[in-house]
Amino acid sequence: MRGETITVLRRGGEQWYIAVAALAVAILFIWVVADGISRGDPFGNIAELVLATGWGFWGPIRYLQVRVEVKESGLVVHNFFTRYSIPWSAVSRLEARPALRILLSDGKVVKPSTGAESLAATVRHNRTQRAMKERIEAARQRALAQGSAEVVTKRIWAGNLTILAGVYVGMFSVAGIAWLVD
Image (cartoon, rainbow, N blue to C red; front, side):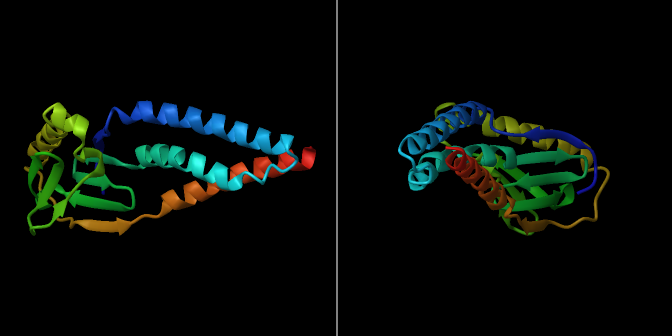
């Protein structure tokens, strides 16, 4: 989608999750490989390594991927496996109860993962979702006068799986090198 990016919307609380997950994954990786080396088999704990670190990788990858880009020409909604490009002319209205929803003029609904409902959001009366809605609505009102002939597009994106596979290949390579050195 063309146009300058006005702002990028993400959920703020996930930054803490990323820090904790990254630290936990690093500690678990070192512990599992060191334990395997001490027993003479760094690959013996691969199942444990995959199970123990799997949750830690999905969070950071999700955070890096999931966002809403507010552009001069419309929205780009990045969900975990899908990416929507939505021109302002296709947006009928926005809702923020309880989750952020973008209602399109053709009747379809786009639900950004970054504006999904949660228990914490409900306790806070959906403050985050309402703030996202207000920021998007302000940009939309400024841009509606310009018009747009673009159409809504949806693409499937599986790059997250490639990233995750690359991380695991890297981890197993380190375990293999440690085994060869030992």
